[in-house]
Length: 156
Image (cartoon, rainbow, N blue to C red; front, side):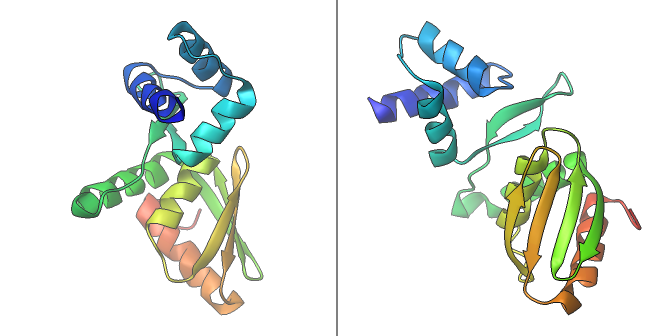
């Protein structure tokens, strides 16, 4: 049942621009799955879904889990997500604070995690802000410049 539901989720997010967990739950219920918001939230986490900018210009759910053989193509996708969502970055000790387009922080954080930059310990994302833990404060400025360069925004 769980794997069927998760397969349905992947199909739904490809067919529709689903922006919220509530919309996803509604589509699943229309497809015959009895789900709660907690179940949908858990499925989103397990499937490693993130948000990307849809054709409407608004954030929508998407799957971004890379396959090893497609790593170059997926790196390009992560870079696009970073470019679309990134607004600015500031350093605070060994924390890089990144501001994003509203609703894009989780997608940008997932992109940063998947780009596997050696300086990054991990990311915590809210709605429009990401805290990036960096190994050492000395690496923070260089990481900020690297992220800005990838995003195409120097001195943001």
